[in-house]
Each structure stands twice: as structure tokens, then as C-alpha cells.
Amino acid sequence: MADQDIIENRLKQLESHLEKENPVLLKAVQSFRELDKVAYRMGLLSRSESFATQIPWWPLISILGTFSAGKSTFINNYLETQLQRSGNQAVDDKFTVICYSEDPTPHTLPGVALDSDPRFPFYKISREIELVAEGEGDRIDAYLQLKSCNSERLKGKILIDSPGFDADAQRTSTLRITDHMVDLSDLVLVFFDARHPEPGAMRDTLEHLVAKTIHRPDSGKFLFILNQIDTTAKEDNPEEVIAAWQRALGEHGLTAGRFYTIYSHTASNLIEDDKLRQRYESKRDKDLAEIYGRMAQVEVERAYRIVAALEKTAREIEEQVIPSLTQALARWKKRVLWLDGIVFGLIAALVLGLGASNGQLGSWWQWIRESTLHSGIFLAVVLGGGYALHLALRRLAARSLGGWLAEQEQALPVKINLAAAFHRSTRPWRSLMAKTPAGWGRGTRRKLSALVNRADKFVQQLNDRFTNPSGHSEAQSDKEETAVAPDNLETPATETKE
Image: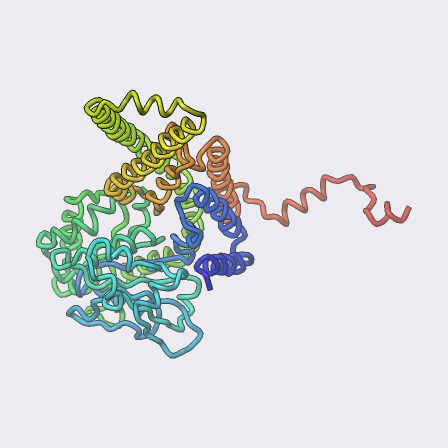
């Protein structure tokens, strides 16, 4: 099956799934199809790609944290099953994607199951790993694994458990996966270990887990959790430990937002004092309820994320991709003109120089003027050869921009093939004087603008679905409309009968 057919089948399956689950997101898939058509026409995507496959359509919850921060125990308690290994030392060095299965027996699958399946958040992640760590892309099983679990709480969502975070020891490829995971997630739980009351020693870890997240536009999806707070019960000093962590996080810019303190009911220290135990349990249960509540609402956040991705991609094409392509064309045009001037100037000088030195210019000119055939042959040779040489110089100028195009593509927030779009705009039949990329014009601009406006309407529809400012239900509205209707209004059936 061709790659194009695989993408088409994937989109059809997605539409079939969303038709009942969320009609707004079904319309979003159809809008992504229209955005794909724009990209195909410009060469930004191949026919085997789609913007819809660049984002996960399942609600995603990522769990980050330091070594021995209790992430695995938290996941096991949440799922109410012993799925993840836990311990005081690092027990798992892979990113684990956990999804629901009807099979009561858990299964563990290799990383290639994620890398090759567009339904999951790490589709083709091996390519990105290869870009930052050559040779590591083939070792995808060393970084990722997929686990299935028969837990009702997993239905409709995916959990991603990260290996213990130690910024000093992390390789570049692992950090790349972490950043990729965070970007895609609808909710990110960041765990710290209350048993290590000197957070200042974890400066590099805090830098990556906190400082790089607070200035993000989606910073509200991060929950910072101080786990295993029960270890402070012996000295009864949770306030001091919490204050130390809050100061450390504050030094990295986290001065607002919710800071949770929890511990596991299955792996906690025994608190013998009844009042003290009740105080700790009360605080733990309150914070856990809030965390679980956010996890339960992740589907709503997913819907807004996908609609936002549609609008963001459409805007980025117009506001960032097109300017980069236009700049590339301007550079290319300048280089072609310089090459034409230098090469054709040298050829003209060489011909004139050789002709003058041999005294053959006059005889050549006389031969050309002898007949129409001679003139035609001369023009064909000059024009044909000159055009062929000009095309070769165009290709040379285009190749000379390969490195620059790669840097520009890497800097763009949207995943497209900038080089392919550029080469489509520099094909032989495209005029050197063209100022806009191939496929770009008023019609394309209007189409992107319409997609942005449509995304805004999708947000309004989501608001109508998840909120109700008026406080009236649909049934109440129908009742009020009926009450306003005249008493002697005949039914359609009566009118038809008469």
C-alpha cells in the first residue's frame, strides 16, 4: 500500500472515530485536509504526509520528575494496578506510553510500535532523534516502550511516563524526546521528591523542568507536585520543606501557580499520631482530588489544543513559512543574476578575444548573413545553448542555498519541507522574476484566512458544548419557545390534511 493510501486510511479512521465522540473535532479533521491541499500545492508537504498526523488526537498526560520522586507509584495508584516498576533507585530508563486495552493481561511492546504508528504521540520520532544524535534513531527501542493496561481510568487518554530526570546525565536525544513529549501533552505533571530537602543542589534539573516551562503560552498545563511529603511527619515540618521548595522554584521564576503536596497511601511511612495522620491525609486527599480532576478533564483540553493547532499552523504558514520562502527566492534570484553576468560575460569576452586574435570575426559574421538557414542555426545555437546554460546556473544557485534552507526549516515551528517548496518555486518554467512562491497568491491567502476564522468558530462551538453562560438547558429553551407560541397554532399535520 502506498504511503498516500496509508495516510488517507488513517484520516478516514480518525473521522469515523470522531463522528460520534466529538463532531467539532470531526470538522477540524476536514479543515486539516484543506490545509493539506494548500501545502501539497506549494510543495510544503508530500502526498504521503498530513498536518493532521503531526499532532496526537488522543488526550495526553505526561509525567516528568526527578529520580525516585514516586512517579511510578503514583501511576500504579492512579491505575489501581501494579503496572510500573517502582523503587528508591532508577528502575526504568525508557519513556513508557501507557494506553487502555480490553485484555486484562498487560503487554509491553517495543519502541518501534510507537515510532511506526501515527495514532501515537511518538510517530516518526526516530527521525528527530537522528537529527540531534546521529545513529541513535535506529536504537528507538532503547528509548521508548508501549504498555497496555485494562484500567477504566485510561479509557480515552494516554499516559506517558518519563525516565527519572537528571539534566546532567541526559543525552541530547533523551532531552529531545522530553521536549517533544511536553509540546504534545495536554497536561504535564512535574514531580519532585520531598525526601531531598535541598533543592538548590538540583539547579540544572530545576532549570529544565521549571524555567523552560513558565514562559510558555500553555504554562497552565503544568502541575508541580512535591511527592512523598509523609517523610516530614517525623519532624512535623512540612511547612519548612514546602517553603524550601517554593523558594527554589521561585528562583527559577515560578512565583505563581498551584503547588501540590501528596504521598502514596500504599507506600507511605506509618504516622502513629492519629491527629497528625488525619492532618496529613486530609491535605493529601484534597490535592490528589484536584490532580485527578485535572486528569479527568484532559479530553476537554485536548479538543481546544487540536483546534488551536489548526489555527496556529495556518498562521505560521502565512506569517513565517511564506516569508522564509520569499527570502530564499530573493537570494536565489540575486545569485542567478550574478552567475549569469559572470559566466555569460566571460564567454562573450572569450569569443571576442579568440575571434579578434585569429581575425575570424568578420568571416563568422559574413557566414551568418549568407542565408536564412545560417542565421537560424546561429540563433538556435546561441539561444538554446544560452538557455541550457542559464538553467544549469539556476540549479547551481538553488543547490548553493541548501544549507541555508535547512537552517531556516529547523527554526520554523511548523513541520514542513521548505527545500521541496523552494525547488518547486525554482522549476525551469517558473520565471526568475516571480516574487512569490509557487502556489501562493490571493486565493491561497484567502483560504488560510478562512481556516483561521473557522478555527475561531470551532472554539465557540466547543465553548457552547462545555459551558452554558445563560444557565438554560436545551429542554428549557424548547419549553420557553413553546410557551411563547400562540394557543391556536395548528400543527403541520392538520395543515397538511386541510
